Length: 487
Image 1 (spheres, rainbow, N blue to C red):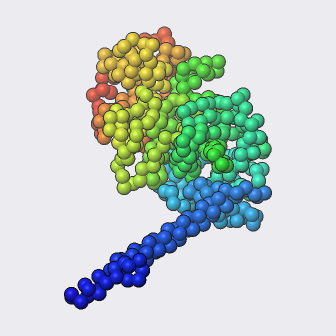
Image 2 (cartoon, rainbow, N blue to C red):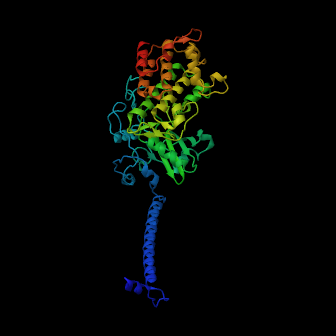
């Protein structure tokens, strides 16, 4: 051992360094060389990957599918057009959740057939209730309408929707003219437009606020890209160019529920009781489909009157999925930052951030109160005990003055029987105990029973107290069912 130590301690001709020092230096140089080579290899690989991504965003005479579009779940389509086929092949296998239909709420067609039907026929499927029904009444099949995508270049057809270029939408909206603005919100501006084939559309231009545009875009595409239901505003396609993120929806030209209830559509008259029930029923069917008809389920998270669009037949269409969340069958809730509109947000969600479909049901209950009363959910212009709509209605019901909750602008009031059943829906939906709230499919059945009632009406001149004491005494599902059956 001493001889080894002596040998290592001997000086060498290189700067008179001892042997063991020289050996340590060599080992250090070797390690440094290996690390440098690994660093160079990683850098070259990263540059190669970045170069590939940049190539995907290069604009050519024939548009390339942007990288972000590869994350949109699509089905391949067969076509003789070779260029269209090549576009479809550019998509990777979908990584986003795919929607699997449940037979109770949609017909048995495969998703590809549904997509093809949406492009080729334009028919809206009623998947929560009677299929192809007229106004949800089941009185006959609706004829197929012309597809809103007919006449557009086939090159853009890529599965579930249509990929629009920025130029397409600039032409459609007259370069996003202020005169074409039909709505504004925290996440973007909505323009009315007309495609080259004459179809009127609503173009949602998402504001590019520090990545929020990308997030909002993906949320809406994931939530309703493949969904087809006659009571959901149909997403026709999208645009992704540079920082631009836009969604193209069908244009619904009869205002929204907020405008009809609170004056903006007053020049068209007062929304009748029958139409209010019809709009609520259509909205309930849409939510029943989102909650119970697909997997993963979709929690809308922003149910309010301004998001219920109304068509010429006064059917309600649920819109604006910018805050939606997907909830798989293996999860009972998802923890998220509290979002929504004050007055509609469920108390348990506001307090804990734990979100599930019961939050939508609470918001729907507030929406029902709003439709019955014609009042805003929160109105600070009213006396203190009337500011909160839900609490005010409960107070009036508890004091047996239920006839006072009906919108005074209604020329023809509902029957006592109809009013009681609609209020029952609302009261159960806003139950403070989320577990006691009914499912949307149960609410659909309750509202269908209201719609089927005889068309008798109580005129404004007819007064009298309506005894609905049983409504506030029936919080549970089974008891509520008995109440509904006896009325």
